[in-house]
Structure formats: C-alpha cells, structure tokens
Image (cartoon, rainbow, N blue to C red; front, top):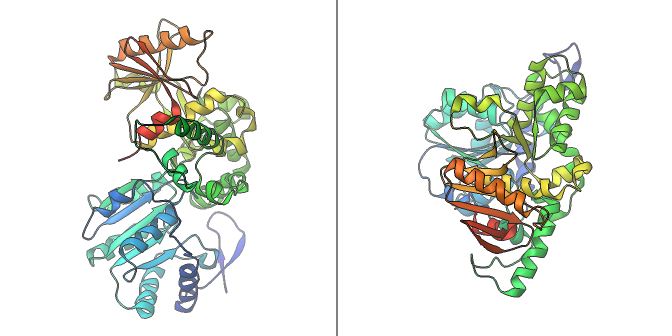
Amino acid sequence: MVLKEKTFSADVILVNKITKGLLGTVIKDQLMEFGVLKDSVPRSVFPEIAKYKGAAAFVVKGLRRCGKSTLLKQIIEAKFREDFYYFNFDDERIFGFSAEDFQTLMETFIEMFGKRKNVFFDEIQNIKGWELFVNRILRQNYRVFITGSNANLLSKELGTHLTGRHVDIELYPFSFTEFLKARKEKVPKKGFYSTDEKALLSKRFKEYFEKGGMPEVIVFSNDAMLRGLINDIIQKDIVTRYNLRKPAELKAVLKFLIANTANSVTYRSIINNFKIKSPNTVQKYTEYAEETYLTFTVHKYEKKLKNFDKNPKKIYCIDNGIIRENAPSINEKKGAMLENTIAVQLKRLGKEFYYYKGKTSSAECDFVLPKEKQAIQVCYNLNENNKERETKGMLEAMEKTKAKQGLILTLGQEQQTGKGITIKPAWQWLLENEPS
C-alpha cells in the first residue's frame, strides 16, 4: 500500500499500487462474477451494435445500474466468447488507477489470455486520459466497447480524440416490452390483442408504471437499490470528477428536481427553496442531474430557435421507480407519473419533442413532435370534467404546430373522437412504439 494525497484537500487516503498481480486478481474475480446470462433480457439496442463490423469504439451511455454491464456481457456471450478482454473500473481495489496503468493492464491481459481483439471496459470515464489510451488501441486494430454514466464527459473526450471513430448508444431502464420479457410474459403482435391479453397487459402496465424499469428492481426485487442510487451517482460520477464541496446540498436539489417531475422548473425556484446564492451553482447542479442520466428537460415549443431558452423547461426523471423511492410526495400524482412514462419512451425512441403552452390562452399540450406532425396529451383518467380542457389544448397545439395526428394517452381508455384525435391506452402505445 502507498500513501497518496487527494488533489482537492489535505486528506490522506490509502490506494493500492497497481501491479500485474493485483490486476490479474481483479480480472479473474470480475470474470467469475459474469454469472449465467441465459435468462437475461435482450435489450432493444442489441441489433444496432451487432450490425457494425471492423475496428471502432462502441460507447454505451446511461444511468448507473440500468443494465450497461449486462449488455456488454450479452455481446460477449453472443459474439466474442473466446476473443475478449473485460475490465470494470468501478472496483475499489484499483483506486488510484491512472493513465500510465493502462499499458500494465494490456500486458496483463496478453499474459493471461494471449492476443485477443475485442476489449470491454466498464465505467472507464473517471480515469483521466482514458480516451488517449482507447485511441491508441484502436490504431492497433482492436474493437473497443466502453460503458459510462456521464454523458458530458464521454461526449467531450470522445469528440476531441475519437471523432468519427466511435458509435454512441444510449441505454435506458427497461421499456415496457423489455419489462414484459423480464416477467416472462408473451409480447403480443402489435395491434392485435385478445380480451384476455388486454386485461393482462393492463395489469402488467400498472405494475411497470409504479415500479419503473430498473433491471435489479424488476428481476431481483431490489427496491433498496433505488434509495441508494442518488448517493452512488453523487459519489462516483460527480464528487470524484468535479471536486464537489457540498454533496448534501446537491442531493437535496436532485431530490427537488425528481419531486417536480412533469413540472416547469426554473433556477430561481431552486435558489428560493435552498437559499443558494450563486445561480452558477444551481446551473451546475441541474447539469449534473442531466449528465448522469438522472433527469432530462423538455423545451417549450417555439417557432424561433432563439426563443427556446427564454421559457421554463419541464423536467422529467429517467425512471418512475426512482421517483417512487426518492420523492414519495409525487406518487399520488398519477397524471405526472404517467406523463413521465411517456416522456421517457419518447426519449428512448430518440424523438425531437417539446411541450406546448399557448401564448394568449390557457391551452396546454404535454408533447408535440414537429417532425412526426403529432401532438400527444397524457391524461390518467379522461372524464367529463377534464375532456373538454384536454381536447382543447390538443386541438390548439395541433393547429399551431401543423400536426395532423392527435393522441390522448390514458391508463386504459380507447376511443376515436374525430378531428384527427385518437384516445388510446398508454400500454398499447408503448408496445407499438418500441425502438427498432
């Protein structure tokens, strides 16, 4: 053991000296943890990865614990069983690993397994200089698969050193289709549902709607993981990289953002709630939430791009289960939770979408998709008290955005209303709008 000082304080911590012996032990232990993958859920992004050939860097980005490591193992199992190296940098035994240790790692791989051409690195983003190493082994004709939990770090460093030589893939918690597969349920052919299937799918959707789609929660019923996830994100993806001085304050802000899912949030509202003096600090906190895939924001629809940043953005959380465990107050707001489910699916599909709010009227529409010429209104329970309001907001949004199709997504109602508007159960829309 050697002593090494943290760069951000006078504290002294113990780190392991990185040797081939240590790396060999970690490599063997990590390979033994692979486990049996025959029952793991095939992810919708898998075909996208499988179609690429030749030397390239595949970068799988997404929230911690959303299944990135399992995806790598599925790729190995399907394509590279006897031709891969694997290393997970999210391991406390290699604390202190630095850029100069990459060469030692590659030498250890070769000594243990001989020459192989496919390299898999989990959570590599916190090793300073990793992109230079990846660039080097790409020149040596390796194929490299990387996972990471910080979108900004990965994009910035890849853009500098690997322009045109990498494929970005974003992984999300389970979609509803993936959830059904994890539950060992048969996924019906799109658009054709028997009465029994409708009843079962409605029941399963209510479960998905409440639990979310984090793999450990669905497969292993590990709800406690959701309560510790924010701490993991703060400590492993933010504190270690950004020299954060007030992690408790950041945690409070992150929980505030989650509790305001499907609402407009401004920097001023955060400043007022937490008495934070610097708007720059608030901006950084909200950026951290997005960079680590915990939340994302949606802009108000505007014809002119220059007006986008003048309006409040609506905030959404990447998973309903995270909301349930970290912001209990919003659990009773079923409409917001359903809206969040749809927003995440639109994000998963890679759609360009906005919210609509009338400038001179009270009309609102949850989502407009200009390229698809579509407007989507989300209403947990459409009834005589809210139908006129929801329809009015939809029609105005369709007129202003030139949308030809309007959808009202509900918990279970289905109807054609005329005027280009269809009422459909959210579960059906989710099944019919899966990433291809």
